[in-house]
Image 1: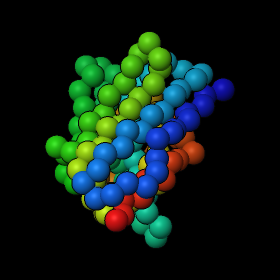
Image 2: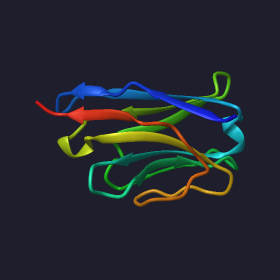
Image 3: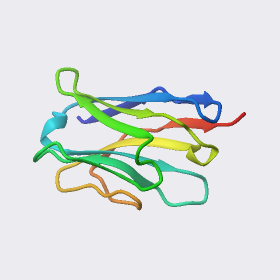
Length: 124
């Protein structure tokens, strides 16, 4: 049974940082496309960042490039999203996800497995 469990969300002031974690069980992350997505009420879930299993390449949505860093630790089967210079518009529920075939940023992509999400609120 595949499980993805996120942690690390919370309230942070504009300009601050947070690191999200996602621990996977039931599969090995480096064999799959992995991604972070986010969703705000009334809007479609959108991809923030993805990593390819083929060569480890990483890509980001334009809105977060240069501020967010996506990484994984194979030994711990865990993925991370380091978020710096946070803005109020980054406020959302963040989800980690895994897929056998692909991943996309900037819009919704039907990943095979999803975590339950962790809320990030950027506000003064």
